[in-house]
Length: 301
Image 1 (cartoon, rainbow, N blue to C red):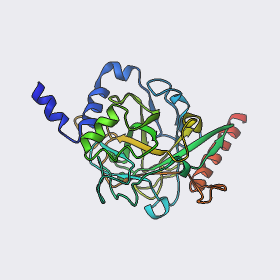
Image 2: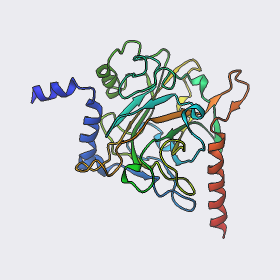
Image 3: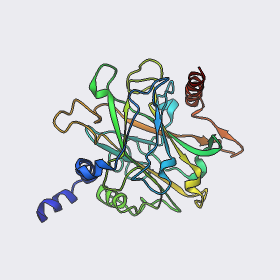
């Protein structure tokens, strides 16, 4: 048994392995929540939060269906790009190598790179200020079970310097994530070795109609700025995510595993002079406003 565990610890895929194991535990699932954005269209449930199993005040973080056109890389300008078949995980840093970075990171440092708190723009909704992070999932198109993807963990840290300077391989990065030593933990969707809270998205679904793979964003995550109240503008922001755990264990063609191109995350960012907020997500937020207006009109009818 000790040799088996030792072998597991030597593999770069330890985190997905532990996450799958934790996700299969009945006790873990009993306290978990699924946010289903697959059926999210006008008039249906298209957002949610995790009330249990997250970091302090994590229930205030909102996961929401969104649909930005176009969202190709040159327009989308991601800070994190990653790709692997089955389960996949990524974390943003300009370090880790040229092109292929840590974990399943790709296109380092151009489209996977460092973020600072001062880079992030702020949006307000209902009197609450948020940092906004948007996902463009590149999965197989409409009509195929592979179009779905599970978002099984998001962890956001801040630190005064890059935590990856002293981490020169995947095992050290994985250990830092498991031990919450990438900095000050600002938000966690799950415990480090659990995936009970997860989101299911359909990468081919729009708020109205359907698209296929890359070119149309799929989900936005709104994180209250209050969770970063004591962070400095110069702090590094490390954004980690794990996808594809909640899939059929017997048939990899069904469920939420990854099977196609790059997954990409971008953030709402500020203009260089800091005088105002550049709504890189502005076009993306318009459908949310329309959707909310339709709901309100429907409720009054």
